[in-house]
Image (tube, rainbow, N blue to C red; front, side, top):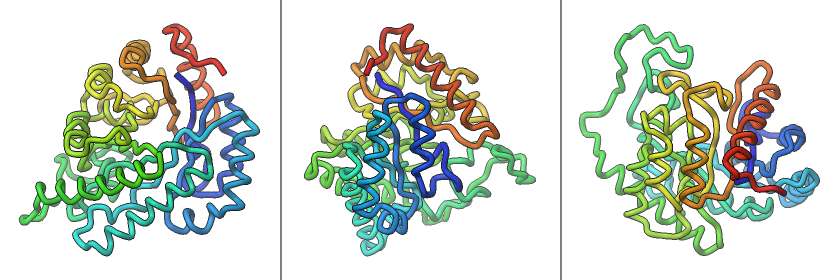
Length: 310
């Protein structure tokens, strides 16, 4: 297995360009891979020009890294679940442009977080964050977790429409020799490991897999090694960070309740040999905790004889 890190761990503002300094910082961590991202359509069309893609790839190559996957931020593809076919097509076109950029950067995998129904409202705009009424420092003044779900909400229709969009995305990836790694979060259409397996049953393709996020699966009360055994070869890429399994989903690797040795063993047993990519941000001393996390997971990989040596 190889170690990587997400570029947006070191961007200001979070997720958004420019990414040059973030690439240098990730490169200084001595990792094998880096994830790149497009925050919105302006980034995808305005920032990722042909010339800049060449410059970014040259910079990434200079650190001996590869782009492990190219990510489209959630709100950039919100139309994938829209009942209006025109809006859906905009997001599909955005994804196709993402494939073009990914290829210019040398990536072979695309990633998005699963969408959630926009008609469901919660005190927090980013619905996955609403896993506890007072989590993430929000003063909600309500002891109960509550979401507003319309009386005419059609869960089956949402699923069918979304899987139709995902099917179109998978077809794009098949046609361009790319892989699509869908990522589960809390409170999304395809969030849990079992929901992911259901999606794989609906869309049968070697190009369709998952980006397994350790913290988000843990926050949904999953025992990670068991989830790994369920998903098997469908795990294309892994996001690593730790969590307490209760209300904190973002801790440096080794500072939460995840048994990293057992997780690595399970990944090794199912044949995973891809990237364990650190996605960790928001700390005052960001580099310190990123470096400690990288050092920790490297130690675990060495202990389990699972580290790919350059």
